[in-house]
Amino acid sequence: MSRNVRNGSKADRPKTTFLQARACGLRWRMSPPRLDKSTLPDTSYQWTTRKAAVFLGALAHFGRVGEAARVVGMCRQSAYRLRARLGEDGLFAKAWDEAQAKGRARRRWGPSKATVLPPESDVFGIGK
Image 1 (tube, rainbow, N blue to C red):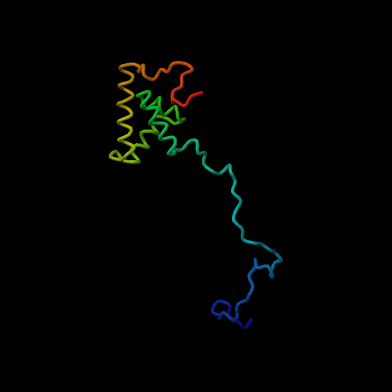
Image 2: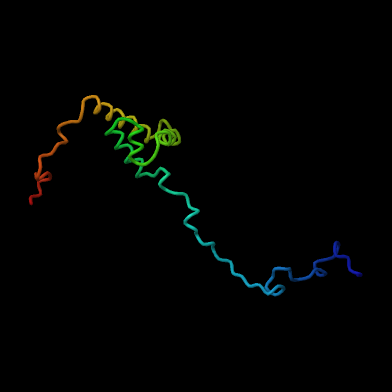
């Protein structure tokens, strides 16, 4: 062989590589990979805005973080982690404190009688 492959110029190198369609007969097309639903994280284990809102409502009702977290299918520890992640001075923490105070007062004084509605009453004044 008179040609030096290691120090050869680009003109001396072969123009096709092993996996090119012309060299090995393979044909392929780049397409986005198929989305396998089993590889996606289960969203029921994640906090969403809706879950956080329902959690705050349950916290205002029960006054206990563990019970409110169970209402939305989460654990007490994940609720505290969410609060820490969003910041102790944030809107969520302030709403948490207010809801918890309201729930504790409700537990202390019992359910208010104003929430009990008479049966078959026209609550909104719309008529029948």
